[in-house]
Image 1 (cartoon, rainbow, N blue to C red):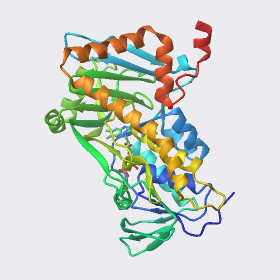
Image 2 (image 1 turned 135 degrees about the horizontal axis):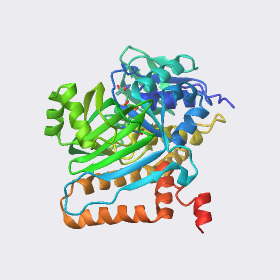
Image 3 (image 1 turned 90 degrees about the horizontal axis):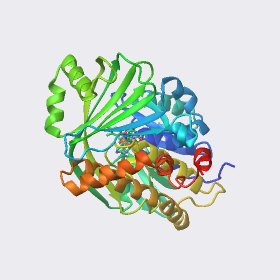
Length: 399
Ligand SMILES: Cc1cc2nc3c(=O)[nH]c(=O)nc-3n(C[C@H](O)[C@H](O)[C@H](O)COP(=O)(O)OP(=O)(O)OC[C@H]3O[C@@H](n4cnc5c(N)ncnc54)[C@H](O)[C@@H]3O)c2cc1C
């Protein structure tokens, strides 16, 4: 049912989360405004989206146009690439162990940008290609001013305007931020051998080095390292860099040829004190930022959009009531806080030279390697919070 509300839902920010949220909301609500400049398509990252996010994209009609450019990830492998005294065992996770054909798909960000931009044009969303400059609370609404002079009285704001969110600030939500002494180098490459849909993550003393399959004999790479090492890698020629990548991967995919030049992303973290307040609902990086470990960021952003859609009443009631905001807060807090903490702890355990920390990490991975029900739990929980305890047919057979 389409609601009879007159003030629009304004989605601030036209990054991937803002576009997904606006397109999804327009399926159930009229009068959705997307306020923000579309990304320029210069982002050289790829995004691994897990099956629950893919299912949601399919449900809102976006997956069909993304799928031809997406590569499945059926196996995930963690290898110890450190020179430390205590080495962790190799752990392999197979999607088939939890009755899935794939954990998810790896998609170039330029593809996401172009498919989402086209879908926006073909939707009922009104797109205003300008940034929000001011928000003023008024009775039962928020007045929004944009850089091109347009003004709206919004019933609610979806703050998908990234880590330095103006809408979050205007709502009076503070955020704790921190930075890591790490930079991610991203690039894509072709290789001599087939990747067999396997993603391999090498744990190194500087952070994870993660190869993720792309279509054909190609893969993308997220190489987390120190800022100084990242600067050194960016100075290399394509051939020199290809040699470094091949060495780090112990030539497991054969000869490497870089075909998308490297880009660097400094790593930081952010967690706000609330996820909805004063008619502003946080989604995407306004609500959570953490290092790219275990492909969580956009997956969480998709869950923010999905939860908004589930939570907002579409019977004409006020979308920004205290009850709706507290429900959104209650639904999003545990997922976001648990993932931010887990990713932070895993990242710090890689960097720590402290022997007991290495022993705990190594012991944890050994448990995962040896004990398949625990592996199943971690795999399911990694895909979607709360699904870890669902037993697969294989767990049941194991008895
Ligand atoms: C190296 C790396 C690899 C990653 N890999 C993965 C992965 O494999 N899987 C995964 O799930 N996640 C991954 N992530 C995380 C993922 O990239 C982010 O979660 C995602 O890009 C966040 O999107 P967003 O739309 O919230 O933020 P953004 O992309 O930052 O978009 C925010 C938008 O808001 C706009 N904006 C800002 N201020 C205003 C304003 N006042 N008015 C209007 N608009 C405004 C900005 O211009 C921008 O376009 C990775 C991150 C990194 C750094």
